[in-house]
Image (cartoon, rainbow, N blue to C red; front, side):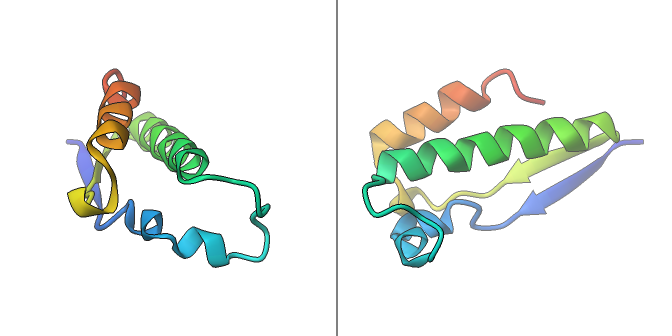
Length: 80
C-alpha cells in the first residue's frame, strides 16, 4: 500500500516572501527562486517515492506565470 503526502500551497513563497529571507542574495530573480522550488519538489518526491509514498504538490496558479507553470510541469513530468 502506498501513501500520499499532500503539500498545500507549495509555491506560496513565489509571492515574493523568499525575497525577505536573510540568506538570499539580493541579485536573485523570481526565475531563480522557481528553479530552487522545483528542485525541492523533485528531490522531495524522489525521496518519498523511495519510501513507498507519493508527493502531491498543490500550487496556486496565481502565484506563478504561465511560463513558470510550464517549466514546473516540464521538470516534474518524469517524477513519481
